[in-house]
Length: 267
Image (cartoon, rainbow, N blue to C red; front, side, top):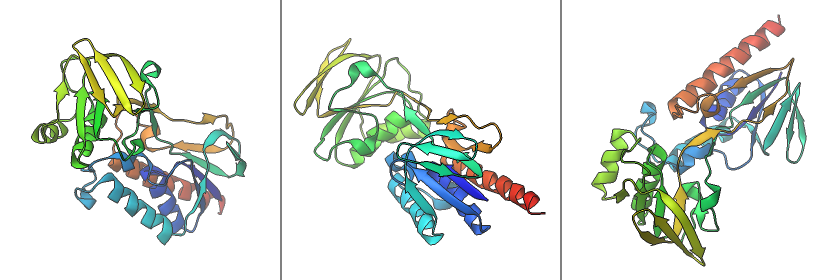
């Protein structure tokens, strides 16, 4: 049985590892870098077995498993899933079972976009020293703390007067003196060279970059399969949770279900 996994984050990799342990034929299709969006995280605290580690360290551990189990990884963005075939930007790939572990994508504010606007912390250029961060949830606070730890100066803009981030992240941000501007919706921005001019209802600011973190949405390929089994796991299946521990549990559970299917077919 050939299993195709779209997405090389915690969910996809954990599923692939367990399938490999059972001797299954599995390939991961990942459009970017193995590890997924966890690489953005300043710290991963929601997976107790590994303690407190950075998103980069977490991704390194996932890559170690890829190498240790000799899992095939194809750099490809899967756009559609049909019966027994995946279609990507550069090719088509046959499979008997498909697993969608493509995670989420950031919600965009096109009107604020420009050459110095970013949605992922990892995409910030190395020369960025000051960064405006728009959003009040976990991702925005995590990015702000990440920036502080990297020696940058972040300022967080929150549209209302309340943070949605978990209390632990709020405490970390306060301990590091991260400025948080409550009730300051960004009205518009101007970008000139390597500077971003941010205008809110309360004033104007100048940064090296603007990082938008106002939420995320499922990143799901088009699924047209009628006869082939397709599983959805991880953040794409639970966009309101987005927890690495859930993603890994999802991947393992999915793999066990696929193993059971294969055993039934081989009887």
